[in-house]
Length: 318
Image (cartoon, rainbow, N blue to C red; front, side):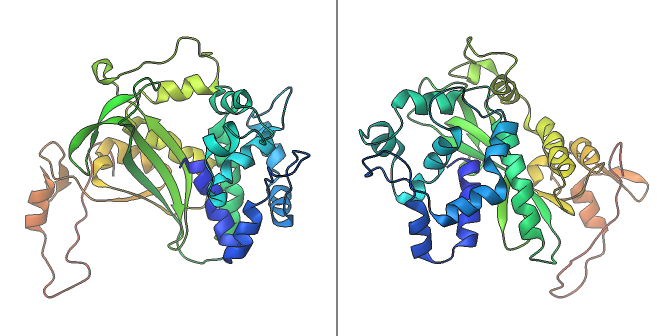
């Protein structure tokens, strides 16, 4: 499931804890209706008005000059999981569906649509709503995972990527996501789908007919970038939109001094230090590895929550 659909799912689940209400809300797309029009519940209408989805879609350049409304198509696609239905069987291959196959495919593959901006605009509204419900410190969470496409062959920018969890190579993509959390809720705000920078590891390249001025082409170029080069722009993009967060949490895979120094211009960083001889920290008059620093610090006896601490200096930074 893509982050946008997950985002809508989180909001609907938060608002309607009763299972019957979720089923009622998911039943807005009534393909059994002879008129072919969608029946939208009062809850969904309230959601559309509160978040001004039509305006957000227009600001994200998600618009059509003819045919069905982009708002109707988008919500019919996002609501499918709640209906327990399948995109192919219940929309594309359904004779009672108000949309044809071409309309759905053209909507999904249009490179001019700015999906990132759509997700950010909705995120700001939802986060500002949830932010008022808790007095806890808010944080951003950076996560890097893999998206397996083992049966795919001709998917654009499909690559051979390494899965650090299973410690093996697989056919698919790397998925870099940035989420917001208050300790109870976890909301995805931004993401990047990454291929491989090495041409020999890519099964497919960028299609030649993609408009190089479009948002889609920029995302394809982004997929060929280093993941560490994308973290600071992603964080800065969220904070500049008014997202409230005190710290950025990330794993040791991104604990590079150069990246941390860049991020410290925007937000405090919490991460696990990398155990490698390539990274050194200035401590007690010398540059030392993390293992050397650990051996020098004085540990607290017993089962203390904080075993020890040390104030070090990064190269080129604090």
